Structures are given as structure tokens and as C-alpha cells.
Length: 261
Image (cartoon, rainbow, N blue to C red):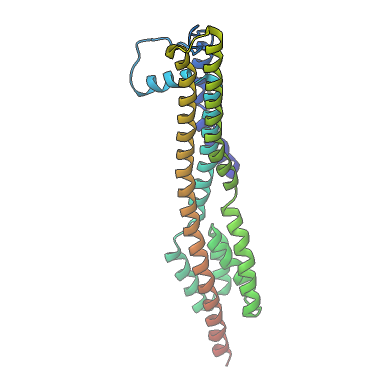
């Protein structure tokens, strides 16, 4: 199921790229002989998407396509993490009292079954603790800590890829800046004149690729921080539940001892 969500999110994000790439490929042969920049055909369209299409082509199809692909891959990983974290979060205000009620009634197996059938790291921690109910409190505490570390690792999975794309986007933009400057100097060398029109083409490529890379980095950074907030929320639930399950097990043992006596 998790792989299905990853593939679905990737396809959902990559489909919009195809029209842009098609437009870019169709426009590649049309170059301005003075600026070296791609000429964008005017088809009468207007609005945001037309302006976006124009800037995409003017920035250079190769670099802008790579930057767009960076955005799509980064968003795919972000969407996968958001879906995973959303599925991992449960209503602890209902789950924890339900387990505590079962333990108060002496139904240890019922509490185990409820924890096993509930998704998420909080329920998994409860299940691992209940499985070791007959062990000492120190053993249960260590088991909860070890298993909690594993769950945190699962929550933070693929975050390194998102940070990679956040770092790549502005780097690709700056690389496009250098390429645009090289184009500007090539045009100066070709025509033997420092005419603003000649230099403008390379400068436009430099600025557009830089803006594109920074925008992609900002978008991915927003989603990355959003994901971190959700992870912190779940980790907080895990820490609270770890304390409460230990208290519940201790109380369960006391109730059982009083019942036997």
C-alpha cells in the first residue's frame, strides 16, 4: 500500500511536466541571433500559465526542465511522507483510555488485541509493552525506548532525499546563472560589441534559472518544515504514551495482586 501511494503521488506530480517539456522541445530551434536566447512564439494566450510557459522557455529548456524535475521529485517524497504520517497519527484521547479501561478490568488479552489492531507507532509501543507485561519495569522501559527509536527512524525515513532536493534546486539555479553569464560573454566575443541587447539574452537566462531554483527550494522547504511539525507531534504522543503505559501496567499488576489476595 505504501509503494502504491509513492507511485501514485509521483505520477500525479510528473504529469504536468510533460506539456512544458513538449513546448520546450518545439521551441528549441528558434534562436535569436543577437542574444542567443530562445524565441517564444506568441499564440495569443495570456494569463499566469502563458507567462510561466514563456519564462520556462526563456530560461533554457535544459536547465529549467532539470529544476522542474527536482521540484516534482521533491514534492513526491513530501507527499509520500505526509500520507505516511497522516496514517501513523491516531486519536490517542480515545485509544489510551480504551486500553486503560481494559487493563483496569483485568482484560490483558483484550488490551493486546486492541493495540495490535490499531495502526501507528503509539499503538505499536503499547503492544510491545503489553507483550512484556510479566517482565520487570526496567525491562519494559528499555524495550519501549528501543522500539520507540525504531519508530522515530521510520517516521523520518526519506527526509534526507527532501533535504537533498532543497539543496539541489538553488545550486542548479546558480549553475544556470553561470551558464547564462558564459552565453553573454560568448555573444560579446561573437559580435565584438558590448551592446545591451547582446548581453541581455544571457543575463535573462541567468536570472530566470536563479529565480526558478530559489522558488523550488522555498516550496520544498515549506513542506519539509510541515513534515517536521507532524513528526514532532507524533513523537510527543509516543513519549506521553510511553509514560502512561508503564503506569497502566503497574496499576494492572497491583489490581491483579489484590485480586489474588
